[in-house]
Amino acid sequence: MPLPHAFTVEPHDHQDCIDTAIDVATQICAERSMRFTKIRQRVLTLIWSGHQPIGAYAILEALKSEYPRAAPPTVYRALDFLIEIGLIHRIESMNAFVGCTHPDERHTGQFLICESCGAAAELDDPSINDAVQRSAGELGFLAQRQMIEVTGLCPDCRPNG
Ligand SMILES: [Zn+2]
Ligand SMILES: [Zn+2]
Ligand SMILES: [Zn+2]
Image (cartoon, rainbow, N blue to C red):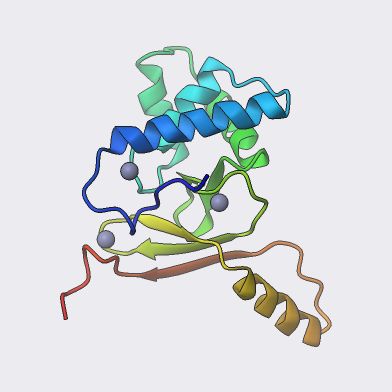
């Protein structure tokens, strides 16, 4: 049940993306007997408010309108939970978070990030993963976690040609 990602979708009703993300998350939490609390739902909704990664501080600011007592630990606990069950990814180079477009599969993060508009699209190509593992292995390196972030221009921002 892949969700739409940033670069495949024409102008679209983004509310559908948000609704689908919440539905999928609700289902995953139910399957794993994990509590999808109001605050977790709210944080996930904020992250899905666009296809651009969003920082923890912006999430906290948005949350404060509904939860005036929300503090950084509130947000970080929710983010940790969402990362842990694979509903979001942390984009290391931006120190920001983005919704996962195929949260029902275990995978490493592979992202294309637009330098112009900030949209981030997720790749899920096991052959990239395998190539890194193989090359690392040839150097005697045991790779444990991969985060691949490629910057460039998305279809909307690149010059036509
Ligand atoms: Zn959308
Ligand atoms: Zn993902
Ligand atoms: Zn762009």
